Image (cartoon, rainbow, N blue to C red; front, top):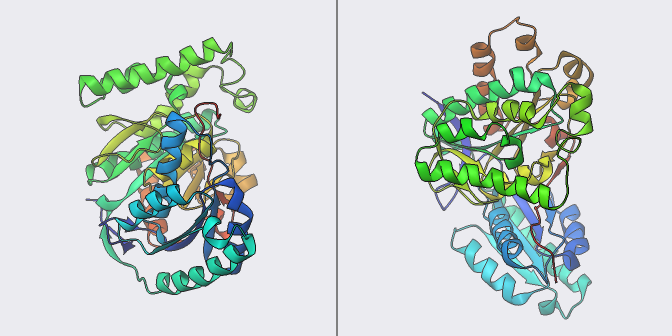
Length: 386
């Protein structure tokens, strides 16, 4: 039903759609060194986490999940980790090693606190890993091996009417084939959460979805935030969205009609295939990164008036149904859905074409964001630091 794509088969059983050499700074002190190393290594993708010491509770959990999630990601062929905390690095390295991923872990402490020594060792280890990465070859894999994140940013009415429902069609087809999809942006379920609850696989899942929305609404109230004017954003309002409820109805259209397995925390990997909700920020960069930490190999990202943010690790299929946006920003989009908006093609036809484009990208077709090297990762924060 879903077909196949050509991917990289990893030691832990997951399938990558890219074969990156990742240079990862696990804290802010080694970020300049990581960038220096990454710039010198062919095909390297560099990610720098700005925080290290003083993280508490959920922030500490997310940081650890992010380090392991990035380094062990199926789109990563090998990982070079640099940092300033030997104890944390040992724990992270042990978790990455358990996946069978080729890696190296270096700290400032082991280099006499000399960033140039760390650079030298990093370049040597990175060169070794780059050669190891180059050994990998693509091979057929079932579509059921795919996990996707569903995102929207700078939405307008065309998003909720056409672009997001097209993602819903792709989601339903992928889930029916045994794959995994995740939808986040919890606050953008507000006013439509009852529709998600009805599709929950279990009463427990329905309760968690509702509670996640209520918790974030109460948090906004506690801080005196008026959602009118902040979400929808001024850009959303100027483009024609009138309320959070209207925006939410468009947002959840990305999830299609499949049953919802449950709710996962930010960056938490779903325990089984199917459609999942993720309790995450409504800000696209943080939301996208949550999906990537959780193992999404591809992100499908709709926009109304234009949004160029893409993931560094997961190729991000950017699409719009707004005819003006497609005409103005066509070179930054990977799929033009404006014909469906104008009624020139049917939704089912456009949905099938979008699914095919996703498979092409999974098999190696470059996205606009990849060609322009716009990728980044932004890890969400939850509590104050010491």
